[in-house]
Length: 92
Image 1 (cartoon, helix red, strand yellow):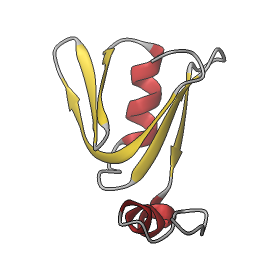
Image 2 (spheres, rainbow, N blue to C red; image 1 turned 180 degrees about the vertical axis):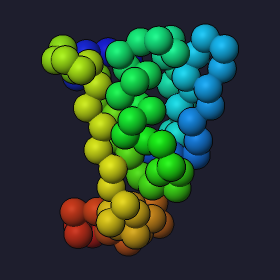
Image 3 (cartoon, helix red, strand yellow; image 1 turned 120 degrees about the vertical axis):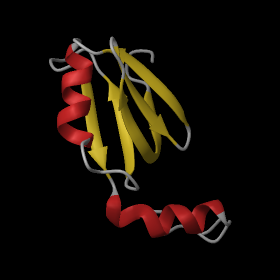
Image 4 (cartoon, rainbow, N blue to C red; image 1 turned 60 degrees about the vertical axis):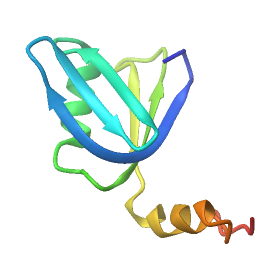
């Protein structure tokens, strides 16, 4: 991910490998070194949150990732995907 880039998707799983942490989202896969600051943030914020919509933002701050969990917006995002509005309440 580039600086100030955000990835948003439904969390499908966290997979811990011998050297990596893999974040599986409906929109793609992110992998980080298992000992990195990023992995620590992701483990802490995302453990047990499978099925929730999440946004992961790369920052130049410490910690280097900001994570938001949008469980309440799930219905809105599903409507947006169907072309019937979005999480902001707009019409598509």
